[in-house]
Image: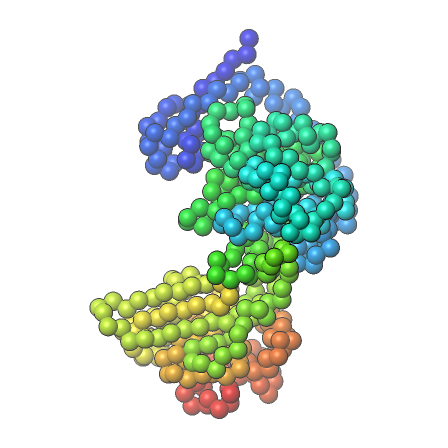
Length: 446
């Protein structure tokens, strides 16, 4: 007779315990313990079906066997294409275009074989309307609206697809565990079943998931360590720009980024120049940042206004507000400027979020430009700022300069790098030197 073991799992964070708990020791949630019956015989026999491989055999895998979409932006995002058995988690806010991107990706990959699109949220008619709008019609593209993972596996065995999309993972459930679709237990079970299937059959899978109010992937955040690739689909509601950002990738560089524009006929790739609008107003500065392996020109805007309340405000959009607070403090300390008594507002144009420290010098320049009410001219500013007020060199500075020159920029302010020289290159080693250039040599920058 099969023995069953009782395990209590937190429905909020997935914490497991052999004993019942009123308050989860991991996340602090109350009354979140769910009872699960686990077969001990299954656990004992789980290792009997294990397969052992020789490492040398795995080294013979041909990189050219990656599934390629023939879209340079998509293929570069995945490190050259999608690997056999790769499990991809795609997260984004509702309405950002996850389903549109998924259907377009199915169309791109259908040339390699049959593709299965699993939709747990829409009917066949709704999917048909979207496909018609996107001009997608392919005999290799199969669609199902089934929500039960066991039934979906039956369909997979019938058609043997080369790529599968689950849209969305929160709507799919398994009969092997209790709980509603989208719950922690259901998501962990469903993702594990999909991962096992993808690895055994070598079928890449795309798991679409929603993002919660905190900006994290709801539910599947707990299974990010299980999947091979995690991608966030970002986009402002008031703009048609969309950004795909890779946070994790076992088969390519993480931090990679692709830019798209959402149109009636779907998503089309764009160049990074779209984030810049020419302006001769104070506070507007251009920089070049690296997101993954790609240099991108960004426009940084600052507004410095005199504070009329006791505590000055620091508001940033597109960068971590803590960076703005630190740079404001460095400027106030080393330049002896009354920044502490002024409100600082900062924005990165186009809704782009940047983390590259090479934008520090541009942010500081933007703040000084607004404070002095002085436009710095058509110049690209690159460099990291230390807490001591020094300007430090950054990686790939030559590539940044070359990328800016391709977009029509030929004047630069950079750190004091010995191997980079030019008539229109101004080098600075500290914020004090930058401040003197802005105040005393403005005509050289315009």
